[in-house]
Image (cartoon, rainbow, N blue to C red; front, side, top):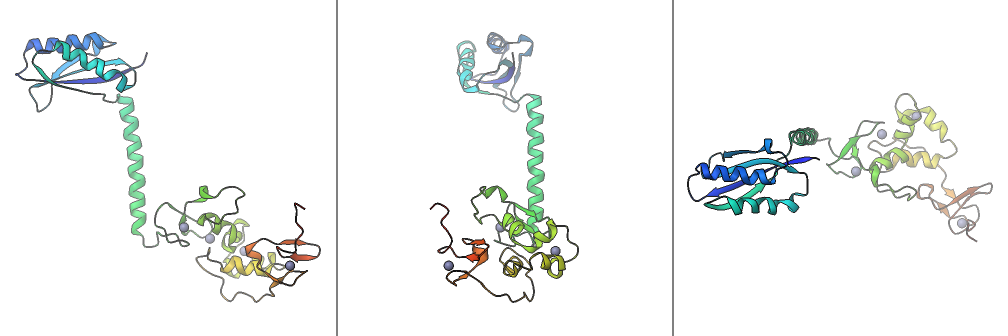
Length: 252
Ligand SMILES: [Zn+2]
Ligand SMILES: [Zn+2]
Ligand SMILES: [Zn+2]
Ligand SMILES: [Zn+2]
């Protein structure tokens, strides 16, 4: 059965003598699962406090602490104060140390990064929890987890740049050179110039397409209303684009 270490601190009204140490030892021995683990010593910097260290069967600390301390209260003479602590095992100690070193390194890296005036999401301006974009190597919110699948919400800076910019499109499709002058990007969107312009100039870019080409606004084939393609809420079929009011109701 697994054990855990416990330390019981007993403060005396007198300088400790042999009978106090003996009482500490026998109290510890009656509670331990391993008599060889028992050691009794004087607390550092406090000659009137004796410490008994020993192992007990692993349990919730709050469930066992009273019973352990009670034993000392009953048997150690001249005692005026009691407390207990549960020091971590060496393995736990090492694990905790490694975790804290990792956290420290992460904080240091974040601190270092924050000194960089460019450490700021180029979309929303936030200065915490950022990553660099793969496409253009700029700081941006590390927030893809905020996006809920199929919600179409635009609350994630990272996703907005990745999904709605030519910068990311150009990179994802392995095009060469600068996206702003890329003939392939331009060609891929030749039938959707409006989207090309939007992808190149919307607020999810840190650098915008200079001199975006003029395009004819998209209009509803039925009522003639202008449709903003980037806003969604339209249909596109053999008759062209239909606005939200004219498109057939899929639930009808
Ligand atoms: Zn952001
Ligand atoms: Zn980019
Ligand atoms: Zn391209
Ligand atoms: Zn319409």
